[in-house]
Length: 453
Image (cartoon, rainbow, N blue to C red; front, top):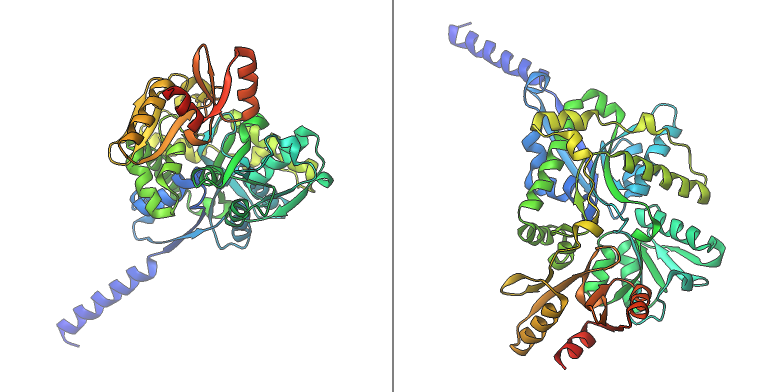
């Protein structure tokens, strides 16, 4: 053998040995591109390549190759099924699906998941809602007795619906529950083929924006915070803990990216998801429904325990050991690496009723962008003047006086009294305020006419 051939053989042997020692780490993630509360652990991380940015590349991972796959689902239930089949490592889902996920895994002899991080929350519980056709004469949940109500069974909205009916004293036998996906339920609301549809974010606002549906019940009425989070198979966590830490770093960066420029973010997310940017703005703008925060707060664990109690009343739900299931270890490691005070963020809770109390109402002008107004009176005047010029207005936004929840102006109920105008999500709330303050209830078009006259 010549020296050249010898060196070639040695080189090839080294390459083959290195290739043999390199490990391919497969990371399979289940997310929901049609559920806004999952975006910071789903579509944003995927499209911006944030997980790839933060994956470990030193130590035992120095020679690792990563194979990342993203699977998109219409709700959380199918993600749990795929995780149990070991086809997904990570799952991003809402509160009730999280509970089902943890309980189903603990029901087995050996399989487990861990709840490792949140994505976002609404302290008051807004996000889920019950919607009726826009011209329906149903305005309150008690009117659903004897009606057909659809919901994606197994979703966060399903849990909210069960809780709402329990609170109202309407047993399951007194209404017809239909299992319908978000898209099917929304289509049936638009065509009037169902009396009501319960769904998670952003479907109720999507129906409102498109002019097909109207909210009669908001999730905040359950009195339980609305949240989403990340669960991971324990066997994957034990083998690749640093990958879980990297995932949480990506979640945090996704939230910061949205906060830095919400208008740009919703424009890009519209392209990725097909959800109109005006709808996404209700969630991700200042004063929006979502507070983006990966930390796991004691209040969230209590909320999840309450959710588990709701499911236990309605079905044969397995027990869930929260002490075993919930872990903050990976969050704390991620925050330490990022140089962020985890405890400070964990101890901060945003109450929209307080945080949004002094925020201006807004008009989204097609060419001028977002324009803010200090009062509803100024807002109504501006709408009238813009219309007179033929300007196109993409959307208008006001805040519910009861909760601080951001609303589309066109779906709100306004009360004019001696104190000026106030906006409300629900007609019963507007009616009560009008009685107490000798006011007049009207909708947006009536308010504009009244102001103009």
